[in-house]
Image (cartoon, rainbow, N blue to C red; front, side, top):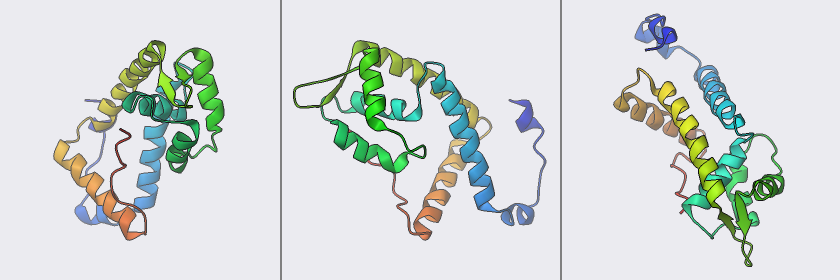
Length: 161
């Protein structure tokens, strides 16, 4: 167990219930996304690279540039030039495009995706340290409800396959 977890103070339910959810979700987001981005940077990748590799792996030969850009843009907070991402992955030899414009993951691309996946799993495990599956599920369901309460889509993202 990490030292940070061991040093967490205990608070009353009333103190915790009065906390600003925006501040805590914002801090959690910055920490989790920062850790993921740091791991991806080991292979000079960004989150949009990662998303592209996963979609190309999950549904081989079905994603064109336009369709994948439409799919990924709602998750992007960096004003990404997705064509530059696709071009970079093609230049690395990680993706190719067939005659229909569908992007195909190469063996090198799959190997890079798996390396990044392993590093991201380390972040996932570190993030979940000291949290039971039941508590994590409750947290996700609470956040889904908050999103829906504020007019967003509280459903899980559709599987890219």
